[in-house]
Length: 268
Image (cartoon, rainbow, N blue to C red; front, side, top):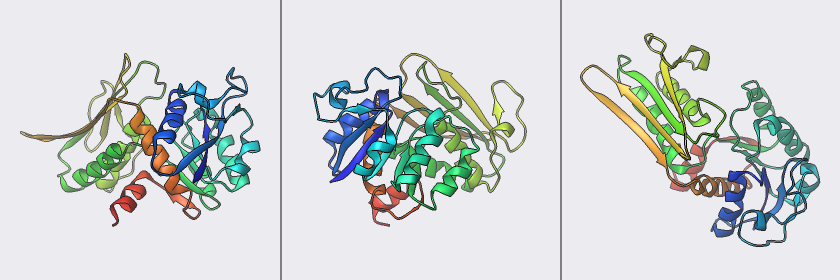
C-alpha cells in the first residue's frame, strides 16, 4: 500500500483526492492531510471534510512533521506555498506530485534542482484525456504547415485565478515544440491584439461552474482542425493524480510528466 499525504486538503481538489484515494484500485492510502496554518479544519478528520466519514487522519498544518510517515506527497494547495512544499519534500527525500498552477516561472529552476534529489512530477492537468490531447497537439503542430494559425481557447469556473490556465500553457508549449520554436507567454497573442505570423494565440473564458474546457484550433486557408477536451467532473483530475502518485512513489529521482505515466501504462 502506497501511503500518501494530501497538501491542500481543504480545497476542492484536496477533498476530491480523499474520495478518489478511497475508491482507487492503485493501492494508495491517505495517511496525512495538510492545510494552511490559518485553516479552521486543523485537527478535524480529513474524511469528514471530504464528506465520506472519518478515516482516522487528522488535518495538520505541519507538512515536515508528517512526511516521514508517507511514501509520496500530492500538492494541490496554492502557488504561494509551492516552493516551501518542494523544499520540505526534498529535505525528507519524498516523491512529490504538484498539481497546483499559477506559480512563478522562475520555479522551473527549483524543479530541475529538486529532480536531482527526489521523483518530481509537475502536472498542470492530471487528466489522462488531457495528457493525450497535449501529445496530439504536439503531433498536429509538427505535421501541419506553418501557414496554419494556432489558437487556444480555454474556459473555467469564475473562481479560477490564473489565466491562461496551466493546461492552456502546456498546450501552447506542446504546439511550439511541434514546430521547433521556443514558447514564451509574453510573445503569445492575448485578447484582441492583431495576429503576427507564427505566434500562438490564447483566449480565456471565466464563468459559472465550468470544470474545464480546452480547444486548440489549427486554422488554415479553406480548412481548419480542432482538437479539444471537456471535463464535466472534477473527479477525473483526482483519479489521475492518485494513479500518478502511486506510480511516482516507486520511481527513482528525476523529473517526470503525465505523458510518462500514459506511456508506462500502455506498455510501450
